[in-house]
Image (cartoon, rainbow over all chains, first blue to last red; front, side, top):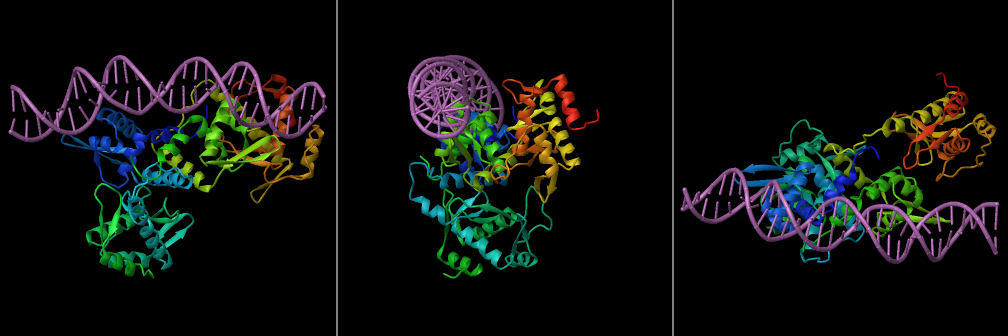
Length: 228
Length: 228
DNA sequence: AGTTTGCTTCGATGGTGATCGAATTATTTG
DNA sequence: CAAATAATTCGATCACCATCGAAGCAAACT
């Protein structure tokens, strides 16, 4: 038939509601067990096992055995950004799932995207880093400037000297809610963990929502020199 | 249920091989008619219509009516980059479409690409036209010289005076098998139909293979002054 | 040892959706 | 006006695949 990459196979894999639910559940970056994923997807453990077999065979998720548990997680940030891109299209074309819960505004505000910060907060941080030339957009690539590196160092965040293609230092990730870029990659991960460890924000159990405390919020704004 | 964007719906849409083929065919940015897309996808016009209905309802493609044709194209670059992301994952996980079977050598030799000749024959013809300066490569654009126009006229092929961006006279198309360019555009189409109508070659039913007859082959070689 | 828990394999079932033949509408061509 | 072409609708068919019940395995607690 046709040559080239078989995108239909990948898409069909994500196209099943149960599997899509599982993948979206893994978007918060935490590894989950097979049964937890079954519950997330709303199917029985047998079905879950069936789906996870397919997903891991296809290389979308990877597993780590630990005792009698099997922890599944996304294989990489490329899978995560693929899912984000899908979310973007789904939002743009109005394909939202019937029940829009009260959590959605919180999701738009701040949420985890695999292992970095997304939502309004993420976009604002990204814009600020760009404006102060800590980040440089260059021919579709994103670079951390020397000033940017010292910005991270001042926070006590040491980033590796050289980056690999597999795990880039800085990467822009398109936001489905705001349709703007936010920071992914090692730097993005480092920032989010910093916010969490310093107590500026905390994760809401069982969802992707990130909630900034009052003081955390003001510190965030001062860090990125945000007006309001 | 769950809240948020319904990525499964989008993915399922792309997950069908026929639809994925159509979308990938639209990746070059050119708008294609429903029948062209049907041929690309390897399905009948009825099925194509069914799929295109779904795709346009979902907002992945948009259409422009022009006479009795309907030209379809991707709705935006976000769709294109989603497809790119999918391709990336597909390649990384080694999900390339298997193209085994006896038809492959024939496909490499000569086949249709939309509506023009591709494969070894196409590339050789292209090279010959360039060498004799019937075609001119100029800043990424391909132009038909006066000599080239008379070359076509001598064959009884009259090409329109002015070309539109939508349907250019000459266009180079990259060959997946040889990784070289071959001639597309109105001129390419005219050439292929000439070969077919003159009986130099015929299409193999149900595939993209073009089979040159013995005499057609020698005429082809003399037309393009090919050595062997 | 025996029991519970986590996960998987097997087998059967059912539903969804892709597909095409035939007929229909719309538009161009002769 | 008639014939040809482009695209669609309708209806029927068929294959695939998600789903779950039941049983099987493996690991961990008692």
